[in-house]
Image (tube, rainbow, N blue to C red; front, side, top):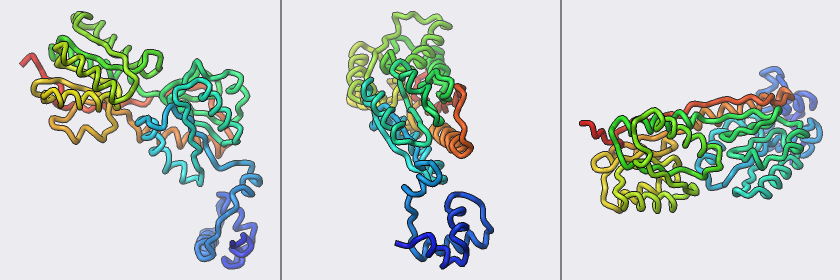
Amino acid sequence: MATIHEVAARAGVSAGTVSRYLNGYAVKPVNAKKIDNAVVELNYRENFLARSLRINKTMSVGVLIHSMKSQFASSIIAAMESEIEKHDYAMVLCGFKNDRDSYIKQMSTLIDRKVDGLFIIEGNEEWTPDDLLEDISIPVIAINTPLEASNIDSYVTDDAWSTECIMRAIIEKSHKNVGIIIGKEDDYTSKQRLAGINNALNNSNISRDDIKIYIGDYTDGFGYKYTSDLIEQGCRCVFVTNHNMGNGALQAIHEHGFTIGKDFSFATYDYLTSTPVFYPRINSVCPNIKELGTRTAREMMNAIDTHQTFHGKRYVVENIIKWNDSIIDLNK
């Protein structure tokens, strides 16, 4: 394996210049080009452990997520990845599977590994130990579930407003006997989405008896079961506030012989991947994954580079609402 001194000799510069360049400091463009060429020619691979000890960084960020199967989390991580890789950083992923003990254990594991920054995606405020966060000295960003701590910045989507917009459209098109399938009641996102639905209902003349709300567990199986139940009760308009459950709902609608936009109205959450597949295209709330992932990754990398922590601010990233033809206008 080539050494830094061999790289320096091949490039015709000092070992100190090579070291500065590899650690992110600016050197003369001509020297940078020579070093790049020497690294390629000698197949030089830096000893990251030695580098970590030298610069007091592990060159890694921790990512604690609700579930490895979460479409939202995996999409966010994909959006973060390219930004984080620009800084030669790696991500260390841990899932807590909706278990309190696992949540605390995995968070402690990431902190003990001395990651340089920590993302908590769809965390749980009630489970987050105050003493653990108070002692943490690295930048922490919470995504889609805010954590009320003075050293954590939170980035959330405007779910309440988005679901209110969809529900208002359903009401304005004179739908009765509407089915709503929503996630677990104690989750922050579910509370926000339900709040938006309630805001729309409170500002309308529709009877609460015309609305049936089902609580699911974010799986396509529950979406399928509850949609089938709603169809059997005569419901012909369903709004599912979760992507996975929405996929199950689509299967149920198809198997019962209905055509969305013709004899059945439907809206859901999506990630700009499924809506173009269906005709008519489905009215969907689409989290702005690219904006959310790229923005939080940039903020994290900047905080690490400048040795800063955060200050308990909350930022809202607007969802994208795709207005299509899947909600039938009964006024016509």
